[in-house]
Image (cartoon, rainbow, N blue to C red; front, side):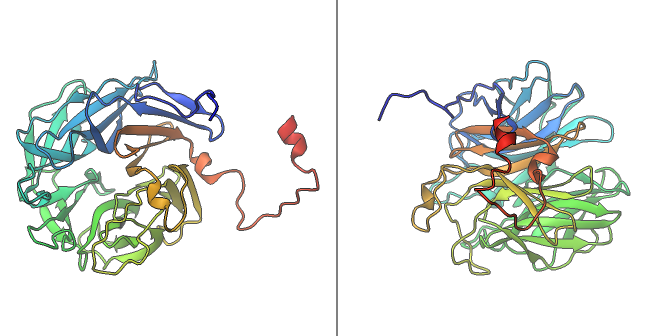
Length: 392
């Protein structure tokens, strides 16, 4: 093939770019020399910058996996080289999440599990929940503290502060068994005294529905969206009493590939959910599935509390393979986190291209909706209509 100029060739150097075709800003965050980057999280700092945390090291589950943090400078628009924050020895520290406390400090919450053992790759049943706090917007971090000491506790979403002041923290419980990743139910930790004491609330019949993302759609009315171990659909459950009781999870219209999702309530009231638009070919309820289909990355929007999702857009298409027998050639782009900053912009991060680094994408809510709202348009290529605008 001819030696042509390269496009879409970028390095994880932290520099931000603008894609005129997609009308998005994006950048690849530096790795700090680590081989893997996974499960990123975001929070806005008081100066208008962003902190991004993820877990980094050699391989998920290994004892050298640690939580690292990078910052997007609001002036230079460059992501910093990440610094290691967590301090566990021979433990795999994973799934970071940021929480802004009512007092203003930033909490970095993450899981910590024993390193993989010979003959046992998955040690999630040993996981506990840790927290480190920053009083200076992430410039420095306090010593690690145990937030929840019960082994087998795993998490992904940060603490949510509800309209009545209640704190709600979504977890799921992992077992040491052959089918431990099917029998992991969702359990919430609930506090009415800003984390001084907590009670547990189990979601009924939730085994295999994990990574709950809670959205308060109205005062006391909560909707939790969940990943499915069965790789069939995103599931949802509702509470109408500030999280004291929950409904049995039900399928939504969105597919799920047994990979993480991220749901938030937009300042305009809609729910936005980031996910991979894929599922197992023949999923079976109750049977764990791991399809190699963690792509594409899309954001869908619901205007009716998650009942329907008429608006959506792909922001990472991978390499574009779509055939039943060749779409596993796409690289994995996974574990998205969606965040809305004070200026209304949306920020999306995810593990990029088989976890080589974290990719950051920035866009407006209007970029998800597009210019038209119609189920089916009319296109007459011989009319010449629209040509003038394109050529202008």
